[in-house]
Figure 1 (cartoon, one colour):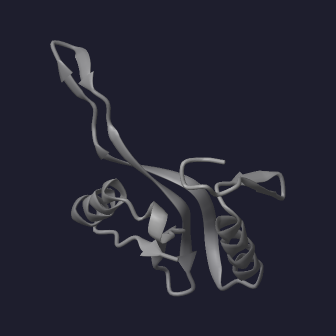
Figure 2: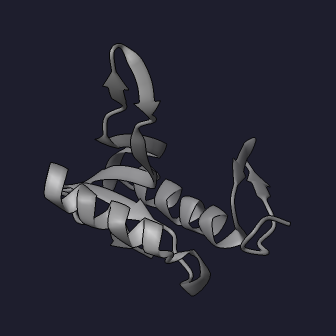
Length: 111
């Protein structure tokens, strides 16, 4: 069990943080096969704030957001998606979601 009390799930040789995330992957995989979406990617990192250095030494590590899924819709829109429950909608996640919009103009879709 992890800090959110969900169990890891394995599907198609891939490990997911929750059963809900694994189910969403199955849905997206079906949409990919039927041509509704393309370019399905998992665990895509976005650097929100680069590492901070003083005199060449890293004093602060970079801040990253890792999207559960990224894909393209039929009309060419890129979707960044995160599987969320009330327990995983933390203040840190909300700040990162807002930084995604501010820095990249991307609204994270929560499912």
